[in-house]
Each structure stands twice: as C-alpha cells, then as structure tokens.
Length: 431
Image (tube, rainbow, N blue to C red; front, side, top):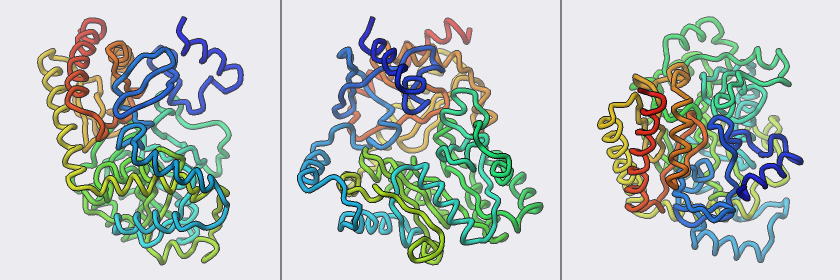
C-alpha cells in the first residue's frame, strides 16, 4: 500500500471526494491521485519518493519550472515584510503596469484571487457596461465555476461527464447561450435573434479545457466583427494562454484585440491570482470609480504580486518563447513519428507550449469532435506514462504544458515513454 493511497483514504474523510478540485481526482483514468511532496525544475516527487517529469505544471502557472531560485528568493524577501495587509502596496501597481505594457487591449487591470473570480467579474462588468443580460459562451470552454458559465463547460465537468451543475437557478442558466467553438455561422444566427440582448461573448481564444484546439483561420476576426456590429463586448479568457503562448498572450499571436481579458496562473508565478482588464472606458465602470461592484480581501496579495512580477521579468529575457517553441517542436515531432509508426488512431494537437494527444480518428476542431475521443484508450495511455515516470493531466480533455525547465533528456525520455504507452493502447484498445 502506497502512502498516496493512505493519504487519499484519509483525505476523503474530511474533503469531498478527497480533493479540493475535481480535476485532480484521477477518476477518469481509473486510478487514485498521487500526493505530491515537492518539485524542482521539470520534476515532481510524490510522497513515495517516485520521480516524474511533469507536464501539468500546476495546470499552467509553472512556466519557469518548479522552485525557480530567483522567484523563491524574491518571495523570501517579501515574507519578511508581511504576507497580507488589505491595503494598497506598490507591488500591485508594478504588476498592473507590466500587464498593461504587455497586452495592447488592456489600459487598466483589476487584480483578484483566481481565474473564476476574474471571469465572474468580467461578466458582471460587461453586463453593467452594456445594460444587457445575456452571455454567449462556447461549448467546452471552461471559465471557472461561476453560475453563468457552467453550462456545457469543459475541464473537470467534461472529464466527469457532467453537463452543468445542480444549484444553478434556471433564470441564470437561461441567460447563457451556448454555441459551438469555431463555428461563426451559428453564432451569427444567434446574434440575429438576440443581438440587442447580448452583453458579451466569452471564450478561450485557444482552448485548453477540452484539450488544446486552435481557432480556425478568420474565426477570432469574425467574432470581433460580430460583437462590434451588435454592440456586445468580446471577452478573451486568457487565464491559461496569457503569457504562455506569447508574452502578450493569444491575442498577440492572432492579432485580435478583445474588449476585456481575464488572466491568472502565470501572472501569479504559482500563487493564487487572477485579473481582468480592458479599455479604460470599460474598466472605469468598476467601483470605486464606477457602480459595478467587486472586492476581495486578499486581492493584490503581496506574495502573489511578488511571484508574478518576478516571473514576468524572467519571461522578458531574450528568445524565451522561441526556446519554448523549440522544445514543443521536438516533442511534437517525436509523438507524431510514434503515432505514424504504430499506425494508431491518435492526433497530436499543439499551440505553442500547450499540447494534447487525442485518441480517435480525424482532427479535433470543437467540443463535439473532442468528446468523440476514446477515453478508455486515454486511461491506458495515462497510466502507462505514469509507470514510465511521466506525469500528465489525468484527463483526455486537459492541456499539457511545457516549461522552460524541460531539457533534452526530459523530452527524449518522454518520447520513448510515449511510444511504449501508445503501443500498449494499440494492443488493448485500438486494435
């Protein structure tokens, strides 16, 4: 009996399902969660002293790798000054100015404590600014567990086969219109019918919560045109992609500016954080400047601000994103070569340092095609990769993340493990 199994049994006595986020539960891969003790660079170590090359990265924030010494040193200095004041600090302004400098669509930004809080606040702001109630979201895009956004969401809901959630009043759910990702025609029809009622369209510009799926050519541009035409706001949820795909996020890559952007993960350097920002005209509607109320005791927490500032400064180093792209290309070439050699129904999908391997024929372009993936095959694949010392997200419908700490040895070992895992999948499922 491993320590992880014992700890999981104990956790279930006090925590619902034994975990503080459903995505960690390992249910979809027919296993028990591994309890992690520490991390260093690209590696994590569980309580049984097993070493893994990690591609979860705390679900995205650890772009530098674990325990970066420069970030740790900065946090230690701040710890000696204090952990929380509930009052303004210079650190908040410093990080806010860095976000504004990095992302052209943001003039002002409000710090919060999580991605969920950021998206909830952005939607409230959109409704307050436009005077409209309806929100449009895309199938499979997960924007946190706010009531308006749990309809046909991705991430843990898709992993666990949950369409929505009990506890959401019908009148709230009815104000959310769900359309397929990457389909402009259906969205245009929705606007023809409800255009003057729609406050905002929110989406992940590159999805990560139904697996990594890129926008079709012209899709984001079409969204921008439609929302402009009908006077609705366009919200990019870049909690995952912000400072990950490029320093300026997905909107830098695709050259489309939203009205509001939500951020998280990397801007906190591994500490709890979120943010939402946009043009000054919109953001000035937020209290105390305007009437749209949002507050938080720990918002702008000095430890999170310190980790975020230090992380962003390190990401400003020359060729950072080229370096990440090189690592990702090596992994992509290796995985694709394995898939081809084994003649297995699987697709490698990647944008920048985010990737997913889908099990099934054909390209994955939206939620429907993602759901057609063979989850039994993924469970076998996941568990064999774990045996080979590779730690992946325990779900077919999550993004994997490459960090600056992954080295050639890590990538080579991962490609070899991938071949073995794919071979086992083919022998057991995809014959």
